[in-house]
Length: 274
Ligand SMILES: C[S@@+](CC[C@H](N)C(=O)[O-])C[C@H]1O[C@@H](n2cnc3c(N)ncnc32)[C@H](O)[C@@H]1O
Image (cartoon, rainbow, N blue to C red; front, side, top):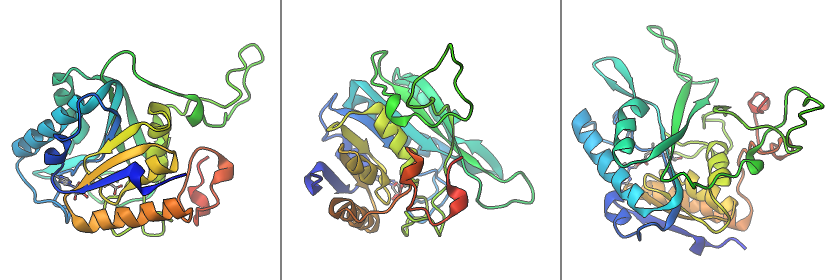
């Protein structure tokens, strides 16, 4: 049975709350931090200040992580002097400083978004997946996807399908998306679902220090994992709580990318993964 006690939501600065979480207690930290681009929930600060704060948060995340655990940092671009600077490039050295190893740089590709006239339109963001040690947990089977080509007779492969690879085609949460909340930068359940299923076991603790509308907590609960989510804006904590209540009463609608038979919640046919 899913219960609200499996989820703890904290309203406040993540740095304060992360310090209260015991060392080596968390299997997965997965988040999308602010990009410092002047969204409604952030004040644009200098790049140095931004990186210094990110480093403090990352250091705490490494401390609370189990030796078999993972950290996934989902980011796009930071903008300065009309230049688009990929945040994953400038954040990577911080993770290295704390001895994490990069396992994958997942490219999250989507088809729709803002169009631009002075450069090619942005159609992807990335997720950096880091591990703390070489004995990290990784379960491929729950996230295998259907094969496009028939398997060779001498190499039949897994009957459950193929490895999803490192480029994931998953629609963004646009205004008509079934998961859309008022949060301006929500990531989709389908993106987080793959990480949670592959990098954690049932009952494991997942932490999102920048929870926003609660996607990480919702996804964790849908798959019987526990979650601590933190956000400094009360309005988003309330949104997250509403979504969690729907998961608990069984009425939550979302788009899953685990099995084509599970997609009926989609209102847009062209969003079905190919
Ligand atoms: C990119 S959004 C996360 C969106 C989220 N992944 C979702 O699906 O809705 C970043 C969030 O970090 C929160 N935030 C920014 N600075 C914070 C801090 N110091 N402590 C806690 N939350 C913070 C913002 O309020 C915002 O909701």
